[in-house]
Length: 94
Image (cartoon, rainbow, N blue to C red; front, side, top):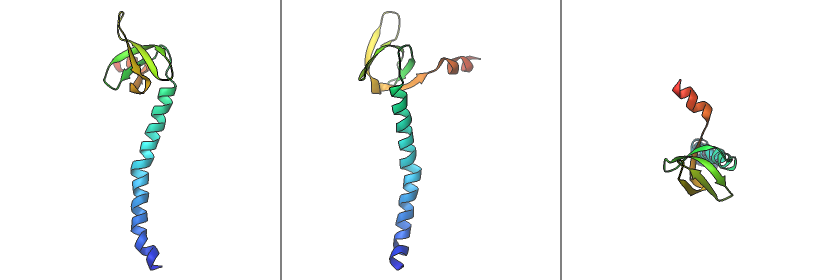
Protein backbone atom coordinates (compact mmCIF):
# COMPACT_ATOMS: atom_id res chain seq x y z
CA UNK A 1 0.00 0.00 0.00
CA UNK A 2 2.90 2.35 0.71
CA UNK A 3 4.34 1.81 -2.76
CA UNK A 4 1.05 2.85 -4.35
CA UNK A 5 0.93 5.95 -2.18
CA UNK A 6 4.49 6.85 -3.18
CA UNK A 7 3.67 6.53 -6.90
CA UNK A 8 0.36 8.41 -6.67
CA UNK A 9 1.89 11.92 -7.08
CA UNK A 10 3.85 10.74 -10.11
CA UNK A 11 0.72 9.22 -11.67
CA UNK A 12 -1.20 12.43 -11.04
CA UNK A 13 1.55 14.50 -12.69
CA UNK A 14 1.40 12.28 -15.79
CA UNK A 15 -2.40 12.53 -15.90
CA UNK A 16 -2.29 16.34 -15.69
CA UNK A 17 0.47 16.43 -18.31
CA UNK A 18 -1.63 14.30 -20.66
CA UNK A 19 -4.85 16.30 -20.30
CA UNK A 20 -3.23 19.75 -20.40
CA UNK A 21 -0.53 19.23 -23.04
CA UNK A 22 -0.73 16.05 -25.09
CA UNK A 23 -4.46 15.75 -25.69
CA UNK A 24 -5.00 19.35 -26.95
CA UNK A 25 -1.96 19.02 -29.23
CA UNK A 26 -3.33 15.80 -30.72
CA UNK A 27 -6.68 17.50 -31.30
CA UNK A 28 -5.05 20.47 -33.09
CA UNK A 29 -2.98 18.11 -35.25
CA UNK A 30 -6.08 16.13 -36.23
CA UNK A 31 -7.93 19.35 -37.17
CA UNK A 32 -4.93 20.52 -39.25
CA UNK A 33 -4.70 17.18 -41.09
CA UNK A 34 -8.44 17.36 -41.83
CA UNK A 35 -8.06 20.91 -43.17
CA UNK A 36 -5.10 19.94 -45.38
CA UNK A 37 -6.89 16.90 -46.78
CA UNK A 38 -10.02 18.91 -47.60
CA UNK A 39 -8.25 21.57 -49.69
CA UNK A 40 -9.74 22.04 -53.16
CA UNK A 41 -9.38 24.28 -56.19
CA UNK A 42 -10.71 27.76 -55.64
CA UNK A 43 -10.10 27.83 -51.88
CA UNK A 44 -8.56 31.04 -50.62
CA UNK A 45 -5.72 30.22 -48.27
CA UNK A 46 -3.00 31.81 -46.16
CA UNK A 47 0.40 30.12 -46.06
CA UNK A 48 2.59 29.79 -42.99
CA UNK A 49 4.66 32.69 -44.36
CA UNK A 50 1.58 34.92 -44.57
CA UNK A 51 1.04 34.83 -48.33
CA UNK A 52 -2.60 35.06 -49.42
CA UNK A 53 -3.68 33.27 -52.57
CA UNK A 54 -6.23 31.13 -54.34
CA UNK A 55 -5.57 27.45 -55.06
CA UNK A 56 -5.39 26.91 -58.82
CA UNK A 57 -3.96 23.38 -58.88
CA UNK A 58 -3.13 20.77 -56.27
CA UNK A 59 -1.93 17.23 -55.85
CA UNK A 60 -0.97 15.08 -52.85
CA UNK A 61 2.26 16.98 -52.20
CA UNK A 62 2.03 20.47 -53.71
CA UNK A 63 -0.38 23.30 -54.39
CA UNK A 64 -0.21 26.08 -56.94
CA UNK A 65 -1.44 29.45 -55.66
CA UNK A 66 -2.56 32.36 -57.77
CA UNK A 67 -1.46 35.50 -55.91
CA UNK A 68 -2.37 38.02 -58.63
CA UNK A 69 -3.36 37.94 -62.29
CA UNK A 70 0.14 37.05 -63.55
CA UNK A 71 1.77 35.21 -60.67
CA UNK A 72 1.41 31.60 -59.63
CA UNK A 73 3.58 30.13 -56.90
CA UNK A 74 4.06 26.48 -55.96
CA UNK A 75 4.12 25.45 -52.31
CA UNK A 76 4.20 22.27 -50.31
CA UNK A 77 0.69 21.34 -49.24
CA UNK A 78 1.79 21.39 -45.61
CA UNK A 79 2.71 25.08 -45.89
CA UNK A 80 -0.98 26.08 -45.84
CA UNK A 81 -1.80 27.64 -42.48
CA UNK A 82 -5.49 28.47 -42.89
CA UNK A 83 -8.38 28.44 -45.33
CA UNK A 84 -10.14 31.80 -45.56
CA UNK A 85 -13.89 31.42 -45.89
CA UNK A 86 -15.87 34.06 -47.75
CA UNK A 87 -18.49 34.09 -44.96
CA UNK A 88 -15.88 35.16 -42.38
CA UNK A 89 -14.45 37.98 -44.50
CA UNK A 90 -17.88 39.47 -45.32
CA UNK A 91 -19.02 39.36 -41.69
CA UNK A 92 -15.84 41.15 -40.60
CA UNK A 93 -16.43 43.96 -43.11
CA UNK A 94 -20.01 44.56 -41.95
